[in-house]
Structures are given as C-alpha cells and as structure tokens.
Length: 98
Image 1 (tube, rainbow, N blue to C red):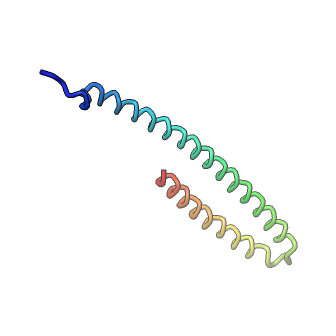
Image 2 (cartoon, rainbow, N blue to C red; image 1 turned 90 degrees about the vertical axis):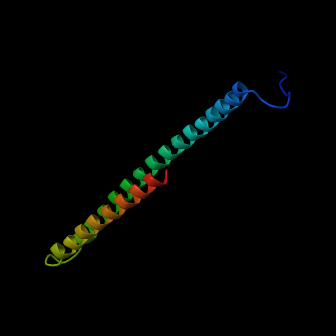
C-alpha cells in the first residue's frame, strides 16, 4: 500500500505539534517574566507613593491647630484603610487578568 506524498504521517504531525507547543511555551514563559517584572515595579511604585503621601500628610497635620489634629488624623487613617481595600481589589484583578 503506497502512501500519498502530500499526506503527513501521524508521527510527523505529532512532531510538528510538539515543536509548536515548545514555541508557544517559550513565548508564554517570556511573557510571564515580563508580567512578573511589571508587578514588581507596580508594587514598588505603590509603596513609594504610600510613603510619600503619608509623610506629606503627617507634616501637614502637624501644621494644624492642636484640637483639629486627631480628627484629621482619623480621616487620614480611614482613607488609608479604604485605599488598601482598593489596592487589594486591583491586585486581584491584575492577577486574574494573567
């Protein structure tokens, strides 16, 4: 029984599929490395912004009259808690995107 020259054997098809899978796996690996790097940069930026904003607010609170400081500090603490909830929601969304 002669085999048609234009048709690939099962082994050839499997070999082609394996090579395609390897190419896509390498591309996925490179993409995940870039995503991890971006995540790290975002986390560093968020930490930096938190520290900067906290320092600015603390210095501004010290310029207020003594009786207003506790109320403003409580508002700032509530805002920090709310921002942490937003950040965690964004991080979950970012992780689910990839």
